[in-house]
Amino acid sequence: MEEHLTVGRVAELAVVSVRTLHHYDAIGLVRASARTAAGYRAYSAADVERLRDVLAYRRLGFGLREIADLVDDPATDAVARLRRLRGLLLDQRDRVAAMVTAIDRELEARAMGIRPTSEEQLRAFGPRLYDAIGPAYPATRRTEPRIAARVWEALGDVRTVLNVGAGTGSYEPPDRDVTAVEPSAVMRAQRPEGAARCVAAAAESLPFADRSFDAAMAFSTVHHWRDPIAGLREMRRVARRVVVFTHDAGDTGWRHRFWLTRDYLPEVAELVAGRPSVDRLARAIGARIEPVLIPWDCADGFLEAYWRRPEAYLDDHVRRAVSVWTRVGPEAERRAVDGLRDDLASGRWAERNRDLVGLAAAELGLRLLVV
Ligand SMILES: C[S@@+](CC[C@H](N)C(=O)[O-])C[C@H]1O[C@@H](n2cnc3c(N)ncnc32)[C@H](O)[C@@H]1O
Image (cartoon, rainbow, N blue to C red; front, side, top):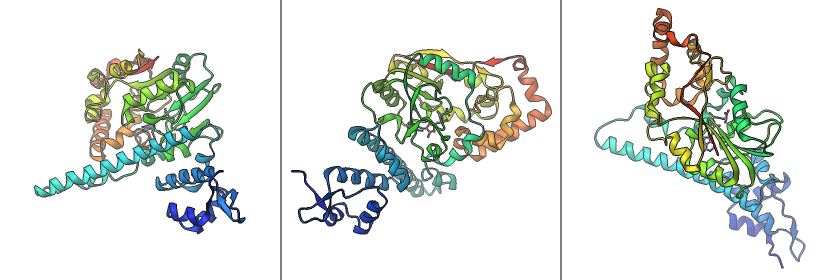
């Protein structure tokens, strides 16, 4: 016979108040659906499992409404739900570890009589990058149809597509059955009405069984992953075909070719240092590499998009929607923007970049990995 637990016993085991349990029951989040022999309300094994998930999401900081969506997700089974929770917990563990490391560093610095800057003190304790910059994202980040066509062509004639690091879903093919994965609550909340269903998880631990999708795609996100190779292997595990749009972090050539990073923002080199090269990423999943040229009037405002429209980088909205500008810090940003503004005014930029004027598209190290 199935074991039933009384409300009091569950409260005791889970260390939550009976009042909280009654509240979850009243709003339909976790109901005590069984009855004891004496007729009291009780929790079945399934109720307890659901409560366990709810409490774990609470500890991760999710709100009750979002938790309801997560635990009611009809497309996931118990194993998929556990994988999702595991991914989120690992993510939180890493963030806590980063804070501990930051404190250790500060203790060491203080022992040597060095006071860390305010910027250093705050950096490790801020929210997840995209929870912080996410609200500025939709201002300039949208589908670039010519690049979308390349991605969709590479996906081929598939029915189900997983979009990893989906953000607001700019490159999701409209005529396929899409499932999105996005760890940032802010980005998930900004997905348009009617967008594909979106699961809170991270690439490194996808909450899906092997071969659950015909294809998996990732657009402009791999460079944010804690472990890009693990994430790509996960995509390969859950899907038969994989399509990834990313930039070549290993090729220093593009940094010299692209005037923004060459002449104004050399700090980008430090940001990408140590990231796996595109060759390494491709090798990890046996993918072929295709170059993607960036049209001069690219509609999606990623870092390289305005290579022929330099004035755009003076616009705060443009910069706030690209994580690099936040990651280099306000000092480097100010210096880069001031330098560019001066060079545009003096004609120095035009003189240095004369060869760009007639170009319709540029090779800036962006690549499609296809397997
Ligand atoms: C530049 S945005 C791209 C969003 C979307 N793919 C697009 O092209 O508009 C990068 C996204 O990657 C997400 N991201 C960061 N770390 C991730 C991880 N470990 N797994 C999956 N996505 C992640 C961020 O939350 C953010 O939404």
